[in-house]
Length: 319
Image (cartoon, rainbow, N blue to C red; front, side, top):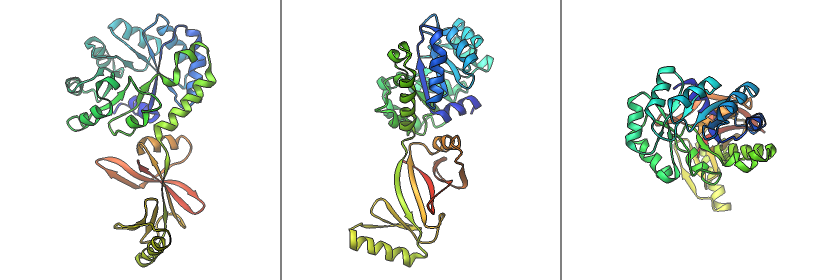
């Protein structure tokens, strides 16, 4: 996959903004970066778009800037000259698609049906905008795409907000999620950058969906594990569930049949996408342990981190 798309996938959120004044661009860009989303799509819906892209790339260099609602060749060329690193169209626009392919500028044409996905894949486009997502079947349509179009990844946009973000973010074929809720027009107009930053942080939390999954307690051998499971069942009515390498007591207590990582055991943290969570935590200086990776259909299902909490190792699991 193109390195720029890999970066977009790592960030996972694409704020879509419409600016009426380039003067607001630096404050907005810095708020996005502080909020943990160093990425923005500036729509070509106003005459200020071109200058706003130029200002953002010049004054907030850590921000990855793209151009959206690109509907013709002239807009595509102006956007790239202004500094846009990628182009987004709400639908399939041949001249924009081929401009991107010919110039090497990543382009995401909008698709809403199997025909559009097939057309993109035929041209070698592995990442497509799914728009309007909410009105085109939402997560059910993405699930339908996953079977016949396993090579395609999507950036769903339209009808997505904090309430349904996690449903999209958890799909394996979703590269990133686009939306406007964290950059509401009234906040941008009023230059309420602290509010934008707060909404961005909330969006990042919802994107990953981190939550406690279970506690793993190291057993010395199968007999010890079985004895602990029996005690928990007798005292607390936690029904045992037998596994190959462990026994679960209820839903949140795992008793390993042999010592594992961590002096005492492990803590499992659930997340929407393990790959994206690993990249996010790497930015927090917490590395993953690749030798512990478990895959399911080619995607990470679980992995341990270089992290110890009171004698407990920590691993991520797909929620």
